[in-house]
Every structure is written in structure tokens, then in C-alpha cells.
Length: 169
Image 1 (spheres, rainbow, N blue to C red):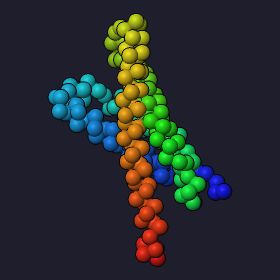
Image 2: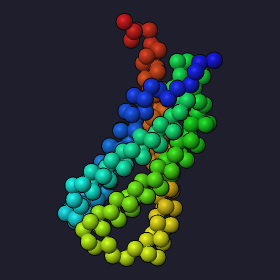
Image 3: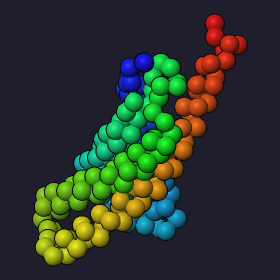
Image 4: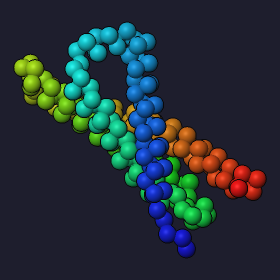
């Protein structure tokens, strides 16, 4: 039986970065459509924006790595079955949503502390974190399912292309 690997890291890195980029583009489009982009960008400094992007990228690549564990092997028939991959992707999408929300809260808290406007850090934050975690988990589930479908389509197309005798030198 062939040894299961994560794809050498390059596939995970590429798909995770693709996921993070798509999430950023979707967020910018939603904020632009609701006319909230201008106010958000004017209140966000460069360091906080870079930290938020890095948090999204890191949690997304980590989640993609956990999802794709054992998915790519030398022999396609030894890969993780579809019935295992889809629930794993859905679960990891939800975990990614909650992990990013935690990073978001921490980054905004540190940014607010440096700006001097800490505000209400107490029961309101706890309620927001609890409700926000549930909402982030559900949104992550849906996004994880969509990305799983896209990833599986890309991997299937790549394998079909590489298995074609005419495509080989």
C-alpha cells in the first residue's frame, strides 16, 4: 500500500493561499456592495490590516493542511475516500472560521489597546464571542464545503490531465 502524504506541502500551500485570496476578494466585494469598505479601510491601520490578512492566511493554510492529510498519494486508489474527505473539509472549515474569529478579536483588542480606546471589554465581548463563534462555525462549514468541491474538481481535473498518455513527454 502506498504511503499517504499531504502532497509535499506545495499543493496544500497553493490551495490554502487560493482559499485565503478568494475569501479576501469575497469580503472586499461584500463590503464594497454594502458601502462599508470606505469606513472600514479608514479606521484600519496598516499593521492591523496586515495582521488580519496573516491570521486569515495562516488559519486557512493550517485548515487546508488538516483537511488534505492523506488525500494525495502516488496511486489515486489509495487516497482518502470522498465520504471521508467531504465531512473532514466541512468540519475543518468550521474550525477555521472560529480560529479566524479568535485571531480577529485578539488583533482588534491589541489594536484598540495601542490606540487607547479599549472600550467595553467585558460581558459584551463575551456575548459577541459566543454568538460570533457559532455564526463563524456555520459560515465556515458552508465555505469549507464549497472549497472542498472546488478542490476535488481541481484535483480530479489534474489527475485526468496527467493520466492522459498524450500529455506526457
